[in-house]
View 1 (cartoon, rainbow, N blue to C red):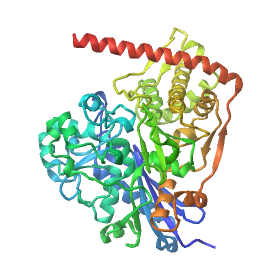
View 2 (view 1 turned 90 degrees about the vertical axis):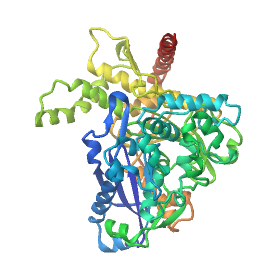
View 3 (view 1 turned 45 degrees about the horizontal axis):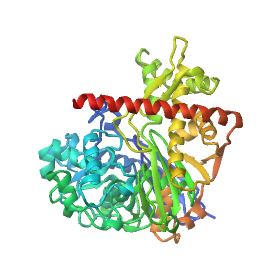
View 4 (view 1 turned 180 degrees about the vertical axis):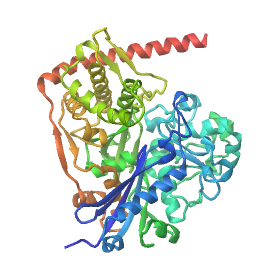
Length: 553
């Protein structure tokens, strides 16, 4: 018998919006759809050489509409009428300036083509200087160290660094900015008509991990601290927010206009937003002492720890510890790597540079990475001495540093493309191992490893090498859309179908269909190679420090 209650989970990734319609009783994915961001796909508003990556909010609105309507077109009218909730996961920190109505400035004609009025995507590292200044100020200003609960180092990928960079570089945007929002806060507010900054329900997940919000020090950083960082921030705190909400929270129902645009009943409850990694961890089935790896263009690693177990301990070098960022009653610990799928795509672009234009190029490009994967799998661990560092877009964890760069070592005239590719894969696994060690060295217990995302499902080579490097079993979630499924679980709680997230997980879990077990001989070899990875990393960091000293002189 068909269930009469359904929910929609939406996942805004780096390149597209994904939507699933799920049965709240079983978790069955009744329909799904993906809609790309056309302006982003065309490379508009981005300057990779300057590490600037911006996304137009109109892309997000159009992709949301197309994805939801396409998914609904695949189901019977009874399913459409039975949709009760909708929740949204987004990349983060992906933030933008808004006016007094909560409208992103890029949606106003005066700023329609101004990249500084758009969403600064998580991979935008233009604010490296600002992040360093925030970190230094937090340690030296004589008051609360507001970076303590975000790992002790502020990142160029995050909220305050992005806001400050725009304020410094664009006086017109600064003057028009009434408030500053995360993508995961703006879209739910837009759908429910609660977009005015003073009414917008801000995500506990986004605020805690990226904006240094923590109830132990009174919420957001004080105005005194922000003004100490830069007087351009004078008065900004009162234009932001005090309270935050977890992803189980209902924030309203669809406005009539959005119900009509999406093709849904106006009674559909919209839940508070959160980041894709955290809702993805829910979709994967995270529980206490589980590490979930969300693997795509970058990776985010989420560990869940009971609130009373962590106590007052502060974990250095990660991307934050936030009570309720994944689910109520537990602290979500976040870490990650800034380039994973992006690193492999970069290598493919290097190799395809000389390919002819047209259909032939497209066909060859589609087969390039799979061919590399197959050939690299035949190489031994260590790829005949070739080694790499995975910091092609800086290092997110441990201890964020966006000024670092990737590297290749041990090259010879005999080095081949598959060997270089395997070195990148192994470096990615070693970077992930450094994150695991940061957690365990701080006393955080990890009993199991789960993985979701496109890279986890597509690259058997990477997953097997990670299992060997970790010397732990890794299970990969069955769903191709685990983030959207996690958002659907949160929606099922927000609309009252399930009492809490664990209950939604028990009813709607997707299960696992891939398991990678460590191999003893390879695990032993990778322990040796991991030591070399740490040594070469220290060498590159030392070179960077010498360059900085030389520049200062």
